[in-house]
Length: 475
DNA sequence: CGACGGGACGC
DNA sequence: CGACGGGACGC
Image 1: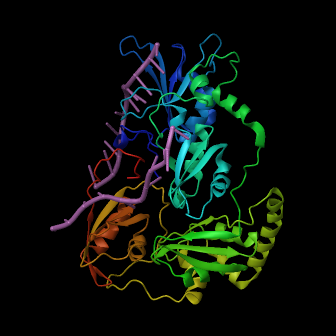
Image 2 (image 1 turned 135 degrees about the horizontal axis):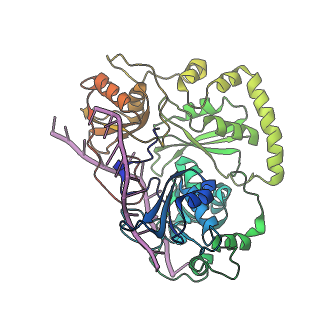
Image 3 (image 1 turned 45 degrees about the horizontal axis):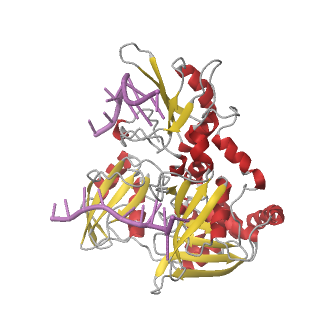
């Protein structure tokens, strides 16, 4: 990824969202003093002290842009209400309104502490809490359910005490959760009992050393620092965007000893949902499988997602966690010392080629998926899925679209492939690359060519239609 | 010619 | 009360 300290293409937005602070300080406060106090919270990309155009005197207002929202939030939490120098007034620190919003209303913590996530339908609220507590103190957790049947809709909210905790969850939780900040539930004004509404704006309290966040922390100190890990179970949910068979999942996860169950999940109509449940007879195997196979490309170009699911009877306990280290160490040595294990160790998480050469080619017989006269280069690694998309190709299929896994297999070979998207019900799709050159190579090689009997037109895509809702697009 | 996804809450 | 500059090199 390139370093854009300055990004004209997203001029009106803050990227990532909520990574910029709005400060109200004394007029005497300089950029240097701000930098001194704020750089400890993370990578500062820009500091701008607003000055009068004529007199060039500071207006006592500044913007501080961080690389990450979690850094900006932490700085806000720690610095709001503090004095930056002797004899200066306590500063106010808010997440800046995005430039495009046009609003100058203070961004409230209500809007920064609740996240919205997609979860397996099998998740309980306890599973949710176990999974997301590692990012901070959870105030509240709910799964959205069908009101009559009580069945999970696979969607949930998690409310943290602090904005930095919600931001950290969004930045660091498994991508399959697709975590984003939740829209505030109601535009209702007053909040009754929460920590923030009263204390937050009133930074000059009887104890000037403590602001609302530190207060909230103090109120909540009960459970101590028990949030070092995810929920850990013997049961894994495997998700794939390309269709996969039970045999494929079985062969892959059976490379790790101790599997005692593997079954595809089906929707109410009996269709394969691209998810499988895998259970091991011990925690160490499950941990190892999750570490090794989450994000693994299988088949090449298709990233598997592997998460722990609570199967109800083996939630980890402090004792369990201690035992786990032993078990995991044993697993490592067992896997390392078996021929199968050595191959798996070699196959690094994203390297499907080695995996095939070493192993699955033997254990997972598979028809070649791609038939074409084009001389295709070998498979290349996908770009990280959060890479900035630099070029998109627009592909027209005739007479019918190719499956997504075939497209990934073909289009990943030019390098830096980020994602393939086929428009439902139409004969067109988009191929996203993080390097423009790779997109151009793919276009040159494949435009007008036939793959699996489907003729392709491959062109540069027009920029997508502007939409300013929900989550910022990656392109 | 052929064009843009996914996921929203009983107070 | 307290809200939006500077400067860009790729095709």
